[in-house]
Length: 316
Image (cartoon, rainbow, N blue to C red; front, top):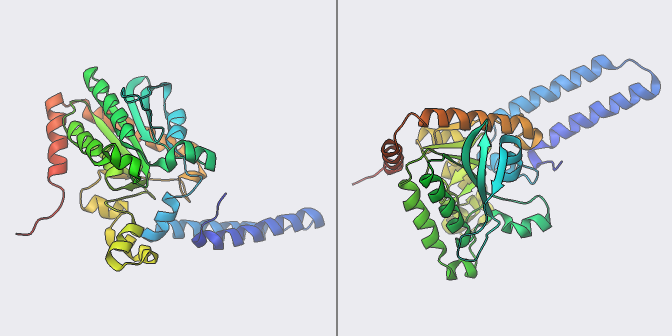
């Protein structure tokens, strides 16, 4: 597993534990007490480390190459997933995947951004950066769910919408804007979960929801810290300072009422235990849908609209 810079002290302690185990096995010496001491030290250090991460460190975990992706969660959470392809205009953007599924027997339309874990996969999924046809495909699925009264779940992990010329030529900004408008009008429950990176309009184009949650070590921001640093200081190396200033992590976002809650991750991050992380997601989704199911279509639409209208502070 890829080790992040700030995690190196943990690997050093683990190396000592492995060395002691090897010595004990080869020599027959009883070193259990020493091994247990080191194991307890490692556990205590990890708990303290991950409970006090800086935004720049959470950023690294959110971008971890082995972090679970959309299809990992679908396979662990859902039954009977049927992928629905295409935007009905001749294109099928693989950076956004969606379809019908059941969660504990309850039908849902589940849609998310998709990242790969290898170079080949990342090329297929465009590194999780959707193009306009991806947002149009998602919109088609939103409307389908709305027509047949099916709740919508979105799982988002994207560094942003694709910024290339081809996306601009096919109206990237317009596609995202239409999604924002149409999601605001949906009369079914919508639950959005930021599972890793939630950057700019690329994330918001799938996140106009009644309930918005952030994984413990994920982030949600109007611009990437690198982009912010490049604009403010003309220096992308100041990304760590920008991450602090942007207030991109769950505690700050909850304080500003941008998100409805944080979902706890396994110790060290979601990539350490896919099943445990998926179980937490499933509990959050089911409890949210149960709460939202008590509201009428108009109540769902109005509460979603009001939720987003009251965001931000204004000075006159």
